[in-house]
Length: 183
Image (cartoon, rainbow, N blue to C red; front, side, top):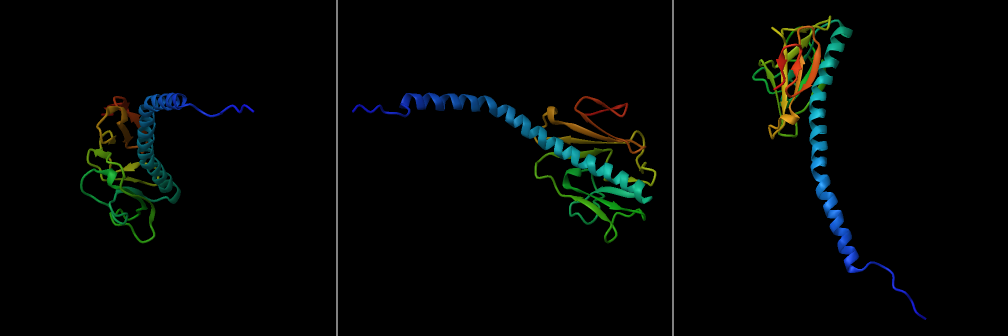
């Protein structure tokens, strides 16, 4: 009886591993692009969503709702412009920086990535009134710029809030709200 051996030879196995390694080496840069893109989109959309929520709640409740920077999730941080440290959304009929008990709607904790999210001019809070207008914002509004840790302009995103409370998100180099450029 003559039995034929089945399986792979060492050369076939090495060739398969080599081809798999080449395919993986080609796929890694695009995988990094996808992960960076998703992280940046999640960060910018987190603040955008909370600002839209605050505006809707202010209109619904008929009173001021504030989104402010907050490191601990209990009070507003009124110094600086670093939104990547976290923020809170709370009902604010009295116009204070310390939310009343039970008035906090949402809390965003500090970013786990080393990305920076800075407002210019240095707005540490945005308050919407019962008509949905942004209260206390002057001039053409504020521009909150998200930079990734590598300072690569491909990942820079801007979130603009104008006096009427309108929110616009743009990529690096694009004009935002008819004047300011995202950079």
